[in-house]
Amino acid sequence: MAEEKKLTEETSVITEKDVKKSWLTYYFFAETGISYERLQALGFCMSLIPIFKKLYKKKEDFTAALKRHMVFYNTEAVFGSVINGITIAMEEQKAKGAPIDDETITSVKSGLMGPMAGVGDSLDWATFKPIIFALGATLSAQGSPLGCFVLLLLPIIQVIIGTNFAAFGYRKGRSSVRSILGSGMIKQLLTAASALGIFMMGALSSTYVSLSTPLEFTFGKGNEPYVIQNILDGIVPGLLPLAAVLGVYWWLNKKNQNMVLIMLMIVAVSLAGSFVGIF
Image (tube, rainbow, N blue to C red; front, top):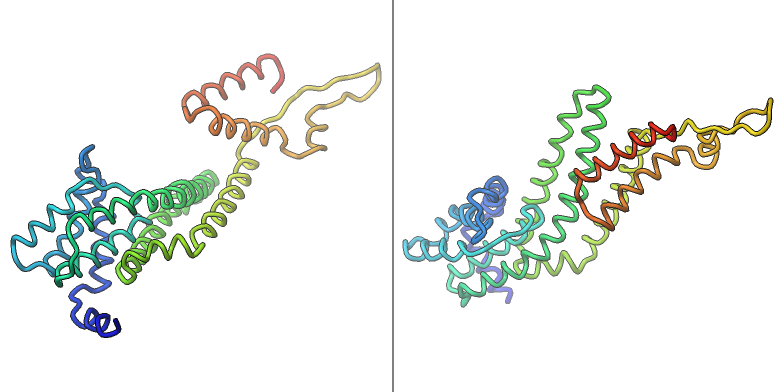
C-alpha cells in the first residue's frame, strides 16, 4: 500500500495548483450555458479541459473524457468544490490504468452533488451572503464608502473556501466528503454561522426598523395620561419593532415567501394604523 502511494505521488502529473485553477474556472463559468438537460455540466466540463490535456494524450481518450462530464450536473459551486477535486483524482487514476469506468465517476458526482449543495446553500447563500450584504447596507446607509467594498468579502470567502476544498478533495479522494461530514466540522460551522446571523439580524432590526404608537389614555381630570409607548418601553425597549420583525419571520416561515405580498401588507397595515391613530 505504501509502495502504491509512493508510486502515485512520483508519477502524478497533476498538482494542487492545477486543481485550484480548474475550480476557479468552474467558479466563474458554472452558470454559463446552463440548460434543463445539463445545468452546470458545460461549466464543469470546461474547467476540466486543462486537466484532461495533461492526463489524456490520445485524442479518443480526451474526447471520451469530455463526453463523460457532459451529463447532468448541479450543485453549490463553493462547497461543492470538493467534488471537483475528487473527480480530478479519479480521472488521474483512470488515466494511469485503474479499473474505473465512466459510470463510477458519474455515480460519485451524482451521489455527492446533493449533500454538498445542501451544506453550501445553508452556509454560503443563506448565512454568509445575508450577513455580508446587511453589513454593507448598514455602512452605506451611514454614508460610509466602505459599504460597497464590504460586498467583496463574499467572493473572497468563496474563493478561499472553494480552492482549499477542491485541493482537499483531490488529496483525500472519495473519502474526503465522509471526513468533512463525519468530523462534525460542518455542524459546528452551521451552528456558529446561524448564531452570528441571528445576532446580526437582531442588531439591524433594532436599528433600522422603526415602529411606535402615539396612543395615550387619561383617567380622571388632572391626572397624567398613560402613554402606551412609555409602558411598552418600560417592559421591553423596542418591543413593537421586535414584534413586527417576528411577525414577518413567522409569515415567511409558516405561510409563503412572496416578498411582494409581504411588502404590500406592511404598507397597508402601516397606512391603516396611521389613519386610525394606532401608529
